[in-house]
Length: 169
Ligand code: FES
Image (cartoon, rainbow, N blue to C red; front, side, top):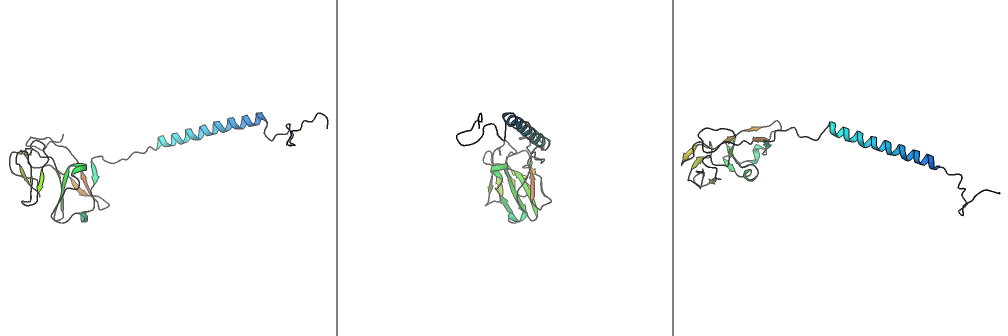
């Protein structure tokens, strides 16, 4: 046929499935729809942010059965700076900061007291009360309660040091 162009592979360049115009049209719509999809997803994420609605000072410290009766545990000293004392069925989280001038005290397993090396203050392990030395008040006992799932939950709080009253910072 005269005037008919034919490619070397036998296809007719005048008979494309996609004309340039239709290709650009489809590409344009694809870009618009992609932008809408990304925008809608971003908007949806903005409407439902990943926020943890929990009190940052309250944290779980395990099941009661994880603590032996009449035990003094240093498990939470590094993370939250408190001793966890189990006395019968009662749990006490006792701040590991001496109420005198803020030194770290230790558990004297022989005498069963908390002993502060800085100025020789020492405390009752079951109440945190001062047994001797210069501390002006008992060790700060933090709230521990059993949450709905049966796990112990402690609440961290900071108190002023060197004063006789327990005053939150
Ligand atoms: S800081 Fe503990 S007794 Fe002084």
